Length: 385
Length: 231
Image (cartoon, rainbow over all chains, first blue to last red; front, top):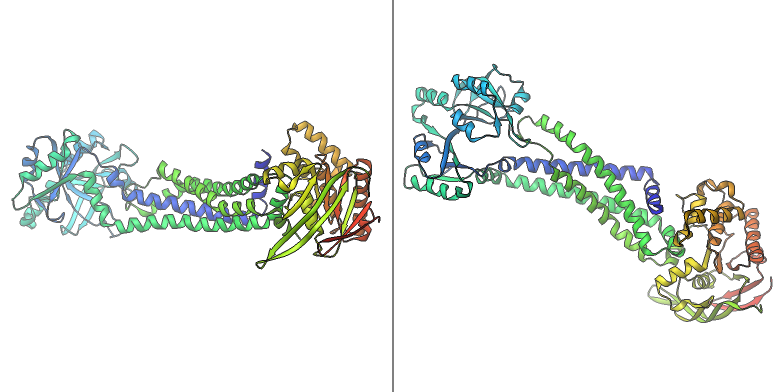
């Protein structure tokens, strides 16, 4: 108790120095938390992937479509429960900065494969009855103020022209990590238009989403699907939804690695700053530590004083950083629009922030603690005056 | 010389320090005794080895060779941890610059050595209040060192030195940082500790006036004792 009192009073002895160090740790822990959240957001798609879903695409590349006739053949493969298909639309809403993913899908089959998207039944019914109807996620609706009944014009880039859709349903996510920034509309609407404008592009799909009865058999089912289309004009590559999503992440892996490195560099820098502060503090107080030892206190007391002060400052800064992370992440996500479909600070990130602060506190105290504990009393006392 | 038994026995003690890779001798074969209840002043020019001798007697430094017994304990052969326990129980320190903890009050500073004992909080309070009243600072218990004058700070340090009822009080230039009036008060206090409480005191000083308070003055020069005299 006495030592705790001494540690706290020592920590507040140089208010400006402690305040600035605390501010540095606060900013570092906040930045670390945000950068970790960005990395997690990058993997959100893969993390939300279901083990009961497979993705079948053209084996050459994702940019090459598959014939729409494959759907029935895939459905007949042993172990397949449902099949849906999707085309990446890539339209622009008003301005290019308004990015959100749009897919032309067979709505009923597709949404049955994604039970994590909660659509009110009456809205779903309305969407099915309207050829131009679309189903959009809650985050997307909130970002652009879309309401049921609104007309959303998209300027096509892959499929030229101006396309108009009517918002018929808004889905919510079953969990916080569910992506609610997507825009789904009838593949039939796209296909019928293509038949009229560019018939050679009609009757094709980008990917098939395949539901499997037993996730344990997913690898076998994937192999069976690809064997059906072996030696055809459009051979397929079937993989789990998670592997498919990680394939996208891998394309930008260098950015993720860079963000990770920066996040740890931030902690390393604040560790150096904190170590310097503690070294300076310990050097100034060497006569006090020597006096403690002269009075009969062991070197452990001196180490506890230094380590305690270092941890008190580091954890106080971390507490402020942890408290600020969620509000700042929320603000950051709102500024980013739908760029990050899921941007939630995870419990793991909070734990990593606290762990980082603990490491900073302990590492910063190691050298000053060792010096103060090992310095000879007469040398420590000599620093007075 | 006093006829009472010796509380400090120094026998053929050598001590040197290394400076720039070379051993610089500080004490060269010093031998002398200090009797129980004695008030001894160690005098000598800078570098004569008086502070080193005091540090050895107080157990905060170790001799290169020789024997050093304090209150019957062979402190030259004690381990660091044994020395720490021994200092806590046997030695009261008074430093030139007081060496009080700036973040602790006068009360807490005096209480500090008692934290190494098994005394209860109530017993500690009783002792601290008594010690502070003995040095005339009962009304300043809750003041931080920065709120006290130099003389008052040294009185707090004296209270801290006597709080564990040590067998020996060592004082290194106790009046070196004080004005004449405060120095006089501190010296009177040390004399009272010696005469009224029977405390053995070893004091290093440059100040002839301070040395006059002692019963015996030992002079050191170039690491050797050159004589003893009554002040």
